[in-house]
Amino acid sequence: MSHFANKLSASVYVAGHRGLVGSAIVRLLTQRGYNSIIMKSSGELDLRRGPEVDDFFRKQRPEYVFLAAGRVGGIYANSSYPAQFIYDNLMIQSNVIDAAFRHRVKKLLFLGSSCIYPRCAPQPIREEYLLTGALEPTNEPYAVAKIAGIKMCQAYNQQYGADFISVMPTNLYGPEDNFNPETSHVLPALIRKFHEARERGGDSVTVWGTGQPRREFLHVDDLADACLFLMRNYSGDSPVNAGAGEDLPISELAGMIREVVGYRGEIRYDHSKPDGAPRKLLDVSRLRNMGWQPKISLEEGLKSTYQWYLRSTGQGAGTRL
Ligand code: GFB
Image 1 (cartoon, rainbow, N blue to C red):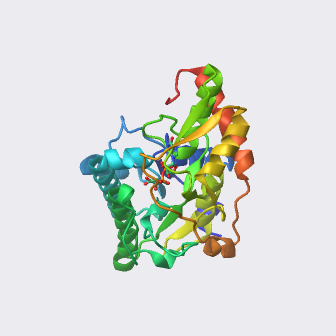
Image 2: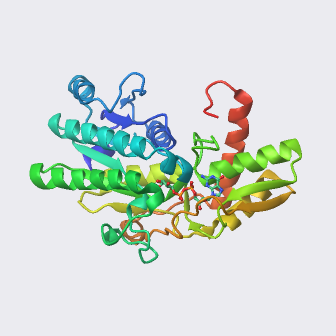
């Protein structure tokens, strides 16, 4: 058992606590009894500014860091704002990782993404396939930033003996997701599209691309559980994949969401929109062999996320719609 597991009063900084992943980590830490969680909104602390980050670490002295801050988005946001995706992520992670080293953080967990792997990697994708081929062009700047983050953790471990680990989650979803149709990922986008079509009695919903790409979806509460598990049980240079272990075509996901929402109309495909990577199913045997597995099925997760979406739209204030 690590010090992290034994000491509920350990000071834990969750960078990006308002996002999908950061908020799930905070929920779980709180549930497990951690009572010294440090959180700063981007308004209070702009992680792209090195001196501010340094100052924050000097004053707060966190012992553990979950680095879940960054600019994220779906296929359209990635291809429309490549400069912001590469700059923001590189700056945030460089500042936080370096400050964590200089201010003697005991352990840091960096969150990457399955898009770091080559576009045509053999499936399921093993951790060793990193940097063995060309990336998917629709999110290359984001992926390059995330690869730099993994390499930075490895370099600090090697040169300075740091304990910085990296987790590569598959496509995530759940409460606090972004449901903005322009910038969101496919799952929240489709929940919103089907819901709004049902509400206005629309006769069809348009899904981008061909519907044929396959994606793997992991509920963010499962990912948070995997992150705490790794913080307690894993140290090492290799990134660790976190996924559900199975994938499905976007057309099938659309069918499941139509069911959950109770929409009766037609599904159309807009072939002018990009498909992105044909498939990115993670090989999750490394994490499984350590003794961790996900608990939330896609069906269950879709239902609870739809309920969350309904509640958040009903409440109005505080939503990010
Ligand atoms: O989730 P998504 O935006 O990202 O798209 P990626 C997945 C697939 O769903 C693509 C299709 O084939 C989309 O064309 N799709 C269908 C839609 N309808 C929609 C829709 O209404 N909205 C969206 N967004 N997609 C992202 C990367 O790739 O995955 C990020 O760009 C990150 O960097 C993330 O890695 C996990 O899975 O293609």
